[in-house]
Image (cartoon, rainbow, N blue to C red; front, side, top):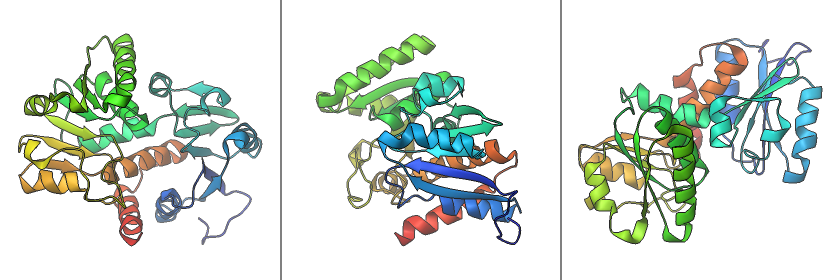
Length: 290
């Protein structure tokens, strides 16, 4: 920004969510804008569910350049937009919106960010056996991007929410004509699935601070040939990742997915290559300082 001065030319990007007090996006984006000398600013706004439509209309009227959408608005925002990119439409959730002169386009950089972090480690999903733990919002984004890119999926969920996993599998088959295995966590089939797996993804919140000593998978079930990817980003190294690292498995932290989803949004708003390492540094400092 112009010597950190906001002017009439400053482009504005915002976050809509509830709550937003602990968001890392402003630190990440404002550092990136400053590093590239861009006249942009990023501001978080707490918006309740009943105010979302008014907030989106207001942002359009104010001609903000773009916005992120977080809990609880990722699904509810969709009918308020002018266009959806195909992946966001399939997943049924939007986390990034670009405003091109009054035309609001919704994207899902959660999914794209997950894939980018995987590819940055030189791992292509095509033909890989992937076990995904969980069937909620994170799992939906992960499952769709992996299915689109040719992975073979097994979705594992708790018995009480097994219908979610079955519905997700049905939707993936309808969209990609790929059979998806569904397992109940208590079925006893997880060990066999992990023996066949190339990649394990934890798309649940198990292991998140403050319950950071919990892991969704017993350490004894992990094998050195696995790539273990945890979407949890706080702590940076979860119990699952520490267990995996200790036996020589490759690991990917949820930090990378978090930063890549932000970096890809940054690119859509600015047209510039994001300073990924700087953004990652800012997020890690906030997670470790929390």
